[in-house]
Image (cartoon, rainbow, N blue to C red; front, side, top):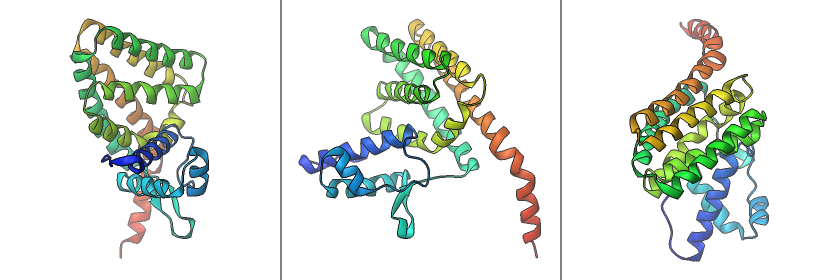
Length: 233
């Protein structure tokens, strides 16, 4: 997201960040209509920066125009989500390697607290809290790995998997495994082992992709093949 100068630009960025957080935390669901008026009242600002922020998020792929309904939260197919899981997973794995080399002292302690928060949510089976804690932790890692612009790009790339992550946390054992992986990432950071940090983060990606294939792609693969064969002349 390119920063705009002046007070108006700051308001646009504020709205874009607010909407991005709401979407990533699944408080705004796929195909849900976004009301400019409701957002402007919520943030106590005029509708103009809200309108501009929605244009920016449309370019990022987080929202889309939907005829008479106006702007809605975007949605994608499981196959598209799987591709983004793969790309985003490897990029954030690289982010973990870079952050491992840079994160020391108080910053590392702060990361440890986020990992503890993630573990607590997993132990308490707090699905919503787990999703928020994970988003916060991944944002923290990216923030200390790349430039602010790249960090936000990776955050946006994580959005398409948001609706599937909501399902994933309902699968027994998933939250515990992911929390364990991030505990491994933190331990690797503490040792300065960037290769292990990347390996643990890639395991998180593999867990997500495996569930996508098991529950959303493979069960319908045969039906899609039948539909395609029927469509043949």
